[in-house]
Amino acid sequence: MVGASGYLGGELLRLLIAHPETMVAHAVSTRLAGRRIDAVHPNLRGVSGLSFCAMDEVSDCDVVFLATPPGVAMTALPTLRAGCVIDMSPDFRLRDLAAYRSIYGTEHAAPDRLGEFVTGCPELFRAELRDADLISVPGCMATAAALALAPLTGLIKSAVQVSALTGSSGAGATAGASDIHAERSRAMRVYAPVRHRHEAEVAQLTGLDVRMTVTAVEAVRGAQVTCFATGTTDEKGLRRAYRTRYTDEPFIRIVAHKQGAHRLPDPKILSGSNYCDIGFAADGDRVTVIAALDNLVKGGSGNAVQCLNVRMGWPERLGLEFPGLHPI
Image 1 (cartoon, rainbow, N blue to C red):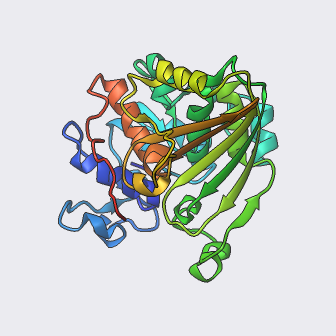
Image 2 (image 1 turned 180 degrees about the vertical axis):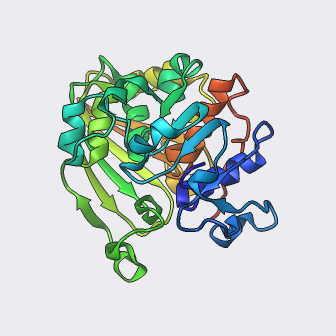
Image 3 (image 1 turned 135 degrees about the horizontal axis):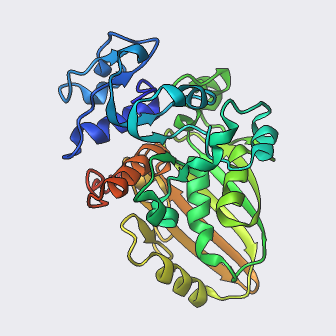
């Protein structure tokens, strides 16, 4: 595991240490090499005596996970010795080089490899993942929005507006001054009014003309997207579309009730779980779809482990059964 000291790395360690079919051989952190992992991830105290190591200490592995900042995976890829690489960074999410340049404002170090990665979203690419040696896990809000919109092909017009809310852990463990508690507490800050990088991912995954606005909220974990579209179906048609697409999916739950405190998806009750809850409403030709997930689990490390389970032919729920907590 490369990038094991970050929030995604910590979640991945938590999941893989407890996974009945995996053994974590290396937890790479360049700046913390030699220190125990529980010095950074205190929830792992007494669970593992593993220490962080440097990249040059890594030997051959069956699987390498990358939970690294942008730019690291694309340069490290040629040096990795593994049967399967699962990348949680943004380096290989976009297939189009021009789109990558436009979104990230830089050249890609391995442009010839962009098309080699299978998108790490089992609900959309399960068949391809079974034989994939290179897997790129989508971003958290991209995963939520793509899962929310995928069943609506033919039922809505192409133009879709997505309003996304995200907790502070989405900024990572080395977030800047705008994410310290004094600035984040009680804030609802629109930090990406246009052209958030996940917008291009959702458009690529759904084929829709997606526009996304992202707001930072006070929560630590969680991402929630509300998708606004114009459609040709009522709520019964929407429910039928989601049931048809997701009935057999182990980590998708349809949450669209008429009453109750939890009648629509809320990321709060999904903390620590690998579920994505999806709800909807319709009024005339207006279609609104809501999806929620834990940005560090189904939006990142849990999705990566789910991809691993598919790739290895293991039961898809293996190591991912935790349902979340309530109240929290």
